Length: 212
Image (cartoon, rainbow, N blue to C red; front, side, top):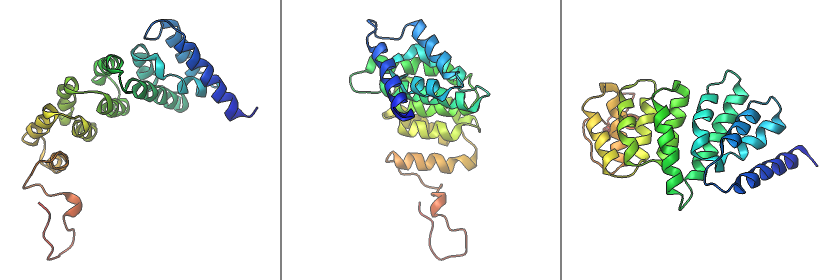
């Protein structure tokens, strides 16, 4: 049996064990086991572990977020991959309770995480969250390190509340960032004047007029 087959078999075994648990969410021992395996220096241990992390749900979010800042690149990357598995598993149809639980955990950690981790959390929230995530995400539009990710997250979250947050920010953010916000508003079907799309603004002398 080759390494790929071995890893796939191991991942399937882990998923099966989780599925056999009578409760809807992971038990503490399962999360502890996941983290221990992701910290392993053996790819044959670490790989199947993150691949099978999806069903662990909200209890796995906080330890995985912490591990995403690990100094070992492979461990941090595996933790990030595991958390994305959790997010996408929770985002399946008819899983709204699991999705809300994962979103709640992500929101608790959004403000206190390192910048690279904040960026990942923002994109995860853009896939799972709704109105409940709009205020904390909108608050980050004033943070130059993550404002672009926050803008994109708000653009992707459906509903009038995220749209209103983008509109409100257009009047408060620095001038250079208003062009990006205007692009998000146009993507949401709004008409915005005064801040043309940068990609369509000529950089050389031309008779072509900039798009509004």
